[in-house]
Structure formats: C-alpha cells, structure tokens
Length: 303
Ligand SMILES: O=C(O)CCC(=O)C(=O)O
Ligand SMILES: [Fe+2]
Image (cartoon, rainbow, N blue to C red):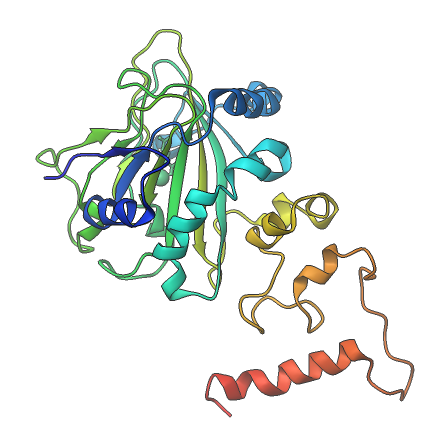
C-alpha cells in the first residue's frame, strides 16, 4: 500500500500527476509562505471567532466552518484559489473532461481540541458518477496552522481513489495523516477516501482551508454566485472571476441573456438587458440569444 508523498513546489507537474494517479493524494510542502498564510488567517480570524460549532458526525461537534472564502479573504482570492501549480494540476486532471474547470467549494475547517475524527468519505459522493472513473473534482486542503498527527491532520487512505463503489474502508486499510507545516497544501482527488483527523490536543485549533475544483459543466458544491455576488466579484482579477463561474462553459452553458455571463461584471453592461423597442429589430444582444437557442440543439444532436 502506497504512503502519502510530500513534494516541493518546484516539483514537475507530471511527477505530481504520477503520484496522484497512484495514491489519489499528495502534499505540496510550503506552497505559500507563512506570512501569506498569516495574512489569510488575519482576514478570516473574525469569521472564525464568530462561527458556530458544527453538529453531527460529518460536520463535527467541536469544529467551526467558514465558507465563501473568496469573498471573505482577498488574499485567498488572489493567492490560493488561482494558485499556478494547482491550476496546472487541474488542467491535467480535469482538463481532458471539460472545456474549463471551476472553483467548486471553499471552506475553512477549524478543528477544536477534543474533536473526534471525521467520518471517512469521498468528496465526490455528492455526484452520481460510478467509481472508478475519471475525476469530476479535486479538492485541496491548505494548512493555515501546522497540521500534526495530534491536532487533527487530515486522514487519507492512499490508493482508495481506485476502489469501486462496493468497497468501504475497514480497520485493515492503512490510514495516513497529512502532517504538514503551515502554508503546505494537500491535493486529494474527489474519489479518495479521507476525513478530518481527531484533535487530541488540549489547547490547539487545527485550521485548514478547503479549496476545491470541478468540471465546469457540473453544479458547484458551494453556490459561488451567492457566495461571491457580482458586486463583490466585480473587483476580483479576471482569472478569478472566471474561475468562480462568471464565464460560460464553452459557448452555451451558463449564459446570461444569450451572452457570456462575464458581461454582468463588465462596467458598461446594464444589470438587465433592455427590451427591444416594440416590433423593432433585434439588437446585437438579442440576436445572440436567438443564435444560442437555434444552434444549441443541433450541436447536441437532437434537432
Ligand atoms: O478537515 C479536514 O481535514 C477534512 C475535511 C473534509 O474532508 C470535509 O469536510 O469534506
Ligand atoms: Fe472531505
């Protein structure tokens, strides 16, 4: 049974892909520097303080969760979500199955002293795909504090991404913890079995951030348009706007008024497209809409 490998940020993407193919997970050590992580921690601090403890076996009872991280931390939006190494990995992993990939979920997971281990699960269990199969999503877990065996470093079963749907984890399976210093990042594909670790410390909180990506023709786990509404998204870098979903998948999926939904973030576009004058000619915008309606069914072979 494979272990959990740790690589450096300078490691070739193909080497990272080979580890992901074999193990379903890999740790990238110090992918961001500790001062950047400290800045994110400071931006999220007030939200973590105010957050409620969870309820139940999955969410934990001594664990706080804070989502919508793109809206709450500018540093997360600029440095974590579009991280170049992660973009390169997602390009290789998800790229072959989509025109583009998207941000799927963001969530800080703040595990308190005395918390039990989270139930092991597959993050892609939310989607109706058969295992094994191509990855529909891939999540990452960033260490905002050091992740140690004692404070609840994420549990992973290396190699379990290849299991079929009938196989469940048992005591015989080797569970490895993703121990890593602050600023490091665990990349784990959607089908690998994993869960938050138990926090056996008396006084340490283990703080991590989930940042996940999925094929952009799927529904996102976290509704990014509500989490990051246009009024906030408008100020983000173009790449991040598109990553969170403010662009179409190919020409026809996710459009707004027949156009690339990115227009809602552009300053010259009215929030709602005006109606054409009665009996008037189609404007460029309405013409586009008609083209979409006409062409799309033919493209998928039903007309
Ligand atoms: O907190 C962790 O280490 C993992 C959390 C997790 O897997 C989840 O909430 O889906
Ligand atoms: Fe998970």
